[in-house]
Image (cartoon, rainbow, N blue to C red):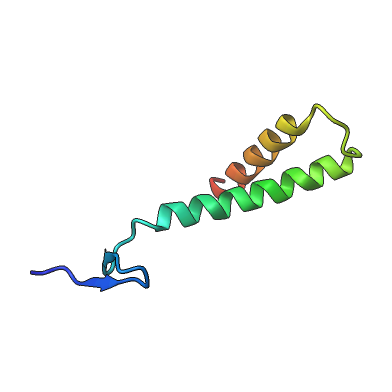
Length: 69
């Protein structure tokens, strides 16, 4: 059975029905949510410097806990 291909606007062929882009979209969605939560954590503490990694890691842990109860 032959796989279907599509031509994009730049002339490159892509295979139809591929889910290769799905993990990238999931990662983007995940990172958007984590970044937003980390921002609100930083805002709540007055954007004091030096805790941005802690904010990100806490937001990441909360996101993982919501996704895997």
